[in-house]
Amino acid sequence: MLKQRRRLRSRIFISFVIFGLALTSLFAVATIYMRARLEDQLINNTLQKQVDRFVEFKRKNPDPGTLYPMPMVKLLIVRPYFSFDVPLDWRRYNKTGVYDVRERGPNGRMVPYKLAVYRDAHYWAFLRYDISSQREGEQQLLIALIVAVLLFGALSVLIGLWLSRRVMHPVSELAGRLRTSRRAGGLQKLAPHFADDEVGELARALDEYAERLTGMVRRDHEFNADVSHELRTPLAVIASTTELMLAAPDLGDKLRERLKRIERASRQAAEIIDALLLLSRAERQGPADGETTDVARTAADVLELQRPQLRNKPVRVELHVEAPLVVRAPASVVSVALSNLVGNAFKYTQEGDVLVRVQEGRVLVEDSGPGIKLEDAEHLFERGVRGEGVKGAGAGLGLAIVRRLCDLYGWRVRLAPRPQGGAVAVLEFDSAPRRDNKAAA
Image (cartoon, rainbow, N blue to C red; front, side, top):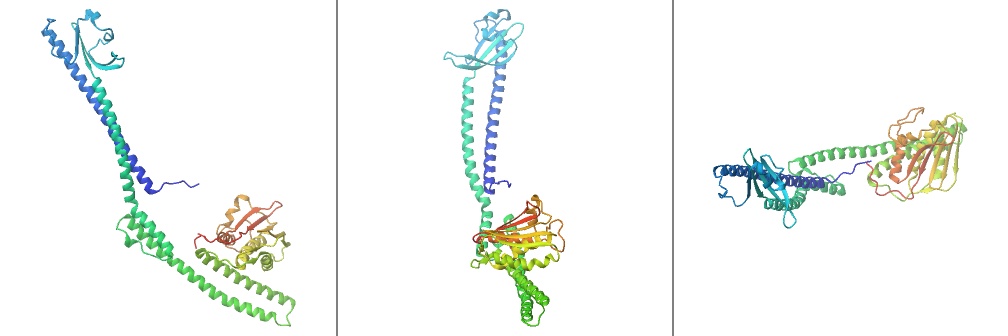
């Protein structure tokens, strides 16, 4: 199963947005943390210094009527042995330092404050500093940073859209020119339309590849045309000569039968050439409609043409026409497809029977050979793959050609083990050939 991938433009956009949000969020968190840490440290140091100064002031001014000039904080100093003068909530803070304390205010809300404590053998001093305004400032800063993160996030989305469109514009233009070139059916240079960058380098590579591919297709087309011209002439000579010899009245039965075999073989060779040339052209242009073929008659001709492969093997060959079947395809195409299926059945069957059954919409070729494994059935349609135990020369191309013809005309072909032993090939025909074939030439 192929993994679904996002478009490159979407990945650039999402990456930029995530980067922008992550960077803004990290900056906001760092700002809040550093502000809270530095502010807390500054307040603690200031309060500790103030309580130390307060104690020092009381040492120098022991008179209770002398007030320490610090109206913004609440100061309390007692002797250690007069702890009953210390508020109950403060008595547990008996070590020098600054503590974060919360107490319930008159309106029932918890009020935060700092409590600076100084204690030695002579004094136990407290300095209370209300930090509720600082906490409100922190909340306001937090809200402001959240709003900033959202604004920067929206800005990242807008910039990401613009940037992804800007970055992907040359690639999109390259893809558009490729589609235009494909629809036009001609080779158009891509590199002159792009700058000397990565996209331009890709365009030059595509131009070079297109030139090589066009050259290969041109050579293939010329080769097919040459093969068609050069082979048709000797086949026509063989066919005409055989026809003249068969017209002679003094031929023996054995010689006449051999000449008929030559005539059928030349006709089969001509059909194969026609089918292969049609396959080569149609995979680029699409198959043509109009011509119809009687499958039963073609199957009978194929059995007669392939029968010499059996030689003297004890194999019974039968053709059962269970339903009439006419398909819209050239007779040469149907003949090549059936010839490969029947030829494989004759090769693999050493004794027993080969049965060709023409049914409604399909043809079955059954044999009593060694059979095939179900897991290997699909693998046999690959080029160069031959079944186990087959005798004689062969390149393993027959079933691959059948599969290409089926792909071209919308047919289906499959192999399966035969329940009573051997194998069965099923060729299922479609009502009409496909028009939008995308197979490569």
